Length: 475
Image (cartoon, rainbow, N blue to C red; front, side, top):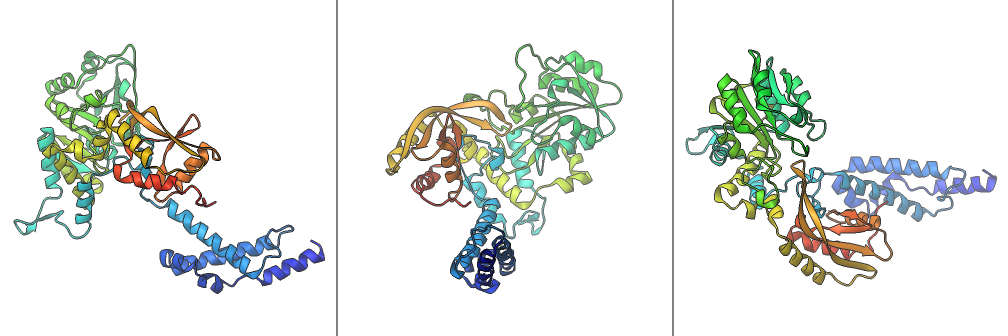
């Protein structure tokens, strides 16, 4: 660095703002209220230190900056950090991808009734209090009663997710015993949730029967011995074998288990409480049918096709459910008051026969192509003229997703967005940076908005985001 550059650098360093000046700046004051004085003060120290280091570099774009420019740069950097933190927080987003049960976006959106129930239960509530008797009540009794009614089971219990339900059932009934399962059902569901690993960790011994694509009843019969504790059937969810295949139905396995004095446990997966065949979900087992076919216990998710909060549900014979309830592991895995409240409200919709109208997942799945076409056309008519932007309706498809039925598609008209001055990636990014973030998908260099997963009340927010494409995107 020559003497002139060094002199300019030293002069710029002397113009650096003090920490106090940064904190008193009008743009920083709202951030202090939002993030706290201590945190923003630490940020200010870090930012000023960064500026000092950059000014001392051989070639620095900061060299020669006036005091007000350096202050503006410092406050701008603090704002960007805080904006970044806001985006990382769990926040509401608009799912415009067309993936109904989107694992990364929280799976099933809750019904208005369920959201209201959570708000009511957020303070003091009767989670373990009998209002009529004025004494301690049974935790989750109303939800369990609804589950008995809706599934025809004798007993029910709720834990924090379906993986926990599987692990708990295996621990209680199969620790130290053999569990027979078809090789075609030794699947991995979700992030590292592998059925063989769960079996091993529960203390059960895995006994594989049949082949990957074909398993017969005699395979199960020949594997049963004095050490057998359970026959396990796992719904493969997002795994499919096609072609030369065969498997054994639940009723035949239930009869075999009963005749040999062992438990037949069915992991039904996504939690369909009603028949969804007319919507293309003909492979999803209805929990009531599993119970009526003779399964001793059945587990399933609360936050997929059932459309409720994240939880794992176990239903079945009353004496088996009570044995699970008495196990020490149950207390570690049971759900909180908010989950019970949301689950009760969701199950109430099934009892009333209004689930398809009330529960967003079912409402989205059941929406017809004609209904969505009308919504898309109305959306385009409401959209203001935006220079350089083109919106059109194209034929396409939505997917159920979430491990429930990733290969099941529902025909859906899609809104394709393009812009003369922006790439598809730029458009998609701008939508993600809107408030709330709008998550779309890109196909063939077009940004696609699928209204199947966008509620009618959210359409206005999408229109507003499209009309604000001149807003700066934070770096």
